[in-house]
Length: 312
Image (cartoon, rainbow, N blue to C red):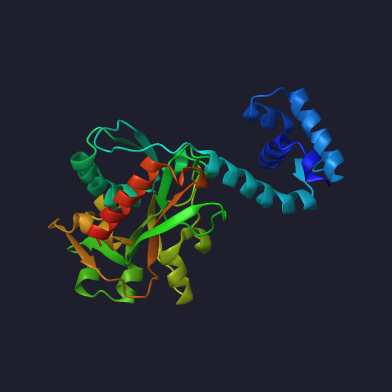
């Protein structure tokens, strides 16, 4: 194919079609008519000599070649958009910009309060719009509609930029009168009732199943290695709810140390190391390549890193 004769607008059509896998939704996303999008798909099929999308019983499905092209096309478009972003000076002391940040409950509890204190000193008119993982899709972060996400992440598209803010270990938060305080061994840990808490990734959460160890996460995967299983009485996606519930004797919450230490001054509670090894995890900041060179974004990322380092 002669690239000089290739309409580069078709790359945008191809990118959106492969993400939406639906002509009507793709047309709506690009704010063009459905016939125009259908015509674009027809031209792509002719140029690439490939169906691109094939209708099946479950809807339109990309061909094997289309799947190979998808990350390449996405990378080209993101690089182009990043390069074309305007380069304006950013003055934090005078800015009234609103930064939209997806933060897990853990990040919102442990990092964001310290970040707000710093903002008050250096950028008093800057505002933060804190969103939960359930409020945001990964595409909204990738497209730059959400400035960044603070959470634990396993698998991310290669297009994202990321930075590790800190590493945290796990501990147990428990009522002072618990038998686990008197003898903090694995036997008493397993005999206790437990509060499960976690929320990572993007999108609306789903109900939990005590038999699905992989979905249960870090703590239960570590126990499974030992051939053990804890008795979970309560599932919650909120760390403060979990920590408040441990004021009930007999309930144990196993959670990151930085979160537990928020309640370290409570005379009813004790913080105890878990009686088995749980791998530590990293709190990360991720953002779109579209915002990588944005002056205000660069400034905020630096402030977040400084805040995290100060609390290390």
